[in-house]
Image 1 (spheres, rainbow, N blue to C red):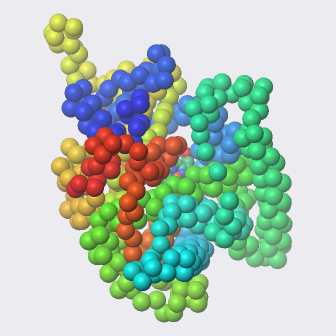
Image 2 (cartoon, rainbow, N blue to C red; image 1 turned 135 degrees about the vertical axis):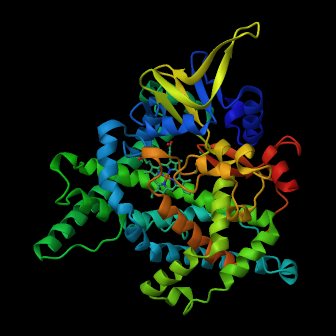
Image 3 (cartoon, protein in one colour; image 1 turned 30 degrees about the vertical axis):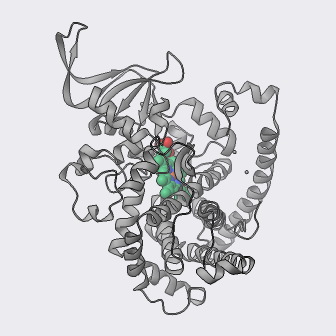
Length: 496
Ligand code: HEM
């Protein structure tokens, strides 16, 4: 397990496993009876992801998510999940997502202004530096994550967190133990648990009020023969939940709506900010690609400075940005190279036969082949490891340069890519099947908009720190403390 989930060496581990044992392997989880199927076989994985009624999320992760953000779409299973997803799907339509573009632009712009002022401060503080080059060392991850949190506050429920303006946060081994023994939190609530409980109360109070206010606006508009025009996800969910074509038994409670807004905040802000951060890091590591992308982005000339554009002008500017071919390739390539969700987990709720792409022979200990198998038996209660990153970096599929950041590959993909599972361009970054990411379109808007604003205003280069990948729920950049040749990520990526 440690080898499989350690982001600094997982690409090499995956490749060695496949070479030595094939595309379907049994690995051991945390405990001896925790047997897991690790599959890099597109046929097997597609089967698992498609049959979400058989392969559910394990209770451990569902309980953890529920205790933090409630039982929204990320944690719910069965009919509860189906109902929630049905009500939420219209809110994420192309049209509704495009309506959120001005909010994303406004926050990208605010971040740009904040960085300009930080650079100005750094230059005044260090007059000697200012003579060299106008620049500053900025913790990109920290700041972009504050900006995407602001975006989801406004886009999610029309709420101003103002995180870019007000600055003021961690998982330990003990936290992991508590996932398996939740009674510890009940008997000995720690400071963190008490904080989470206090936050729940505040969220319930504030969000409860927001839900009541929005419902009043929706029914008042109805009485006047019009429709409430709120564009945030909360308004859209509330409207979708009362739509006349939705049978009453398919509607969800206010509590479910609240849990899903929480879920969007949790699932949608860090993931997006990490993809933006990783893209900027990759561009810093590959200056020629950065220069080429900046040239493409700078070739667009907005009608006026961004802050004075009308909503329509912002919409049409975004439409132009969305169509830029090199930006599209860079976004795809970055999402392929470093998926913020490194891997996921499912548990079989019944015995099942998982199909495999090519038959395997079972061998006796003395090497005699005894049987040819066309499927693998997964018994009830077994886990299936979903190796998102491994699918994206599989060199037998993507070609020998599959570990390199090469946006041009998207203009000429190998044939083998077309059979890879994935919601987005045959990569698994947004997962696949009925439980795949509902916010994919939203995050692409965020990525392209932020990259446009941040790359047309600044140039990025690495600092002297070595940045590695660390899996802390999501794949995050961290100062790499490994020796130079121990970390596959820093080493492979810097030497390409
Ligand atoms: C780059 C950004 C993002 C990435 C890489 C990403 C990735 C993923 C992945 C891999 C899953 C499946 C999780 C699993 O099976 O364990 C997922 C599910 C989900 N994502 Fe995203 N996500 C992103 C942005 C967003 C945004 C912006 C939102 C909402 C505003 C969002 C909302 C959700 C929800 C609600 C689910 C659960 C869907 C379900 O189970 O029906 N995500 N995402």
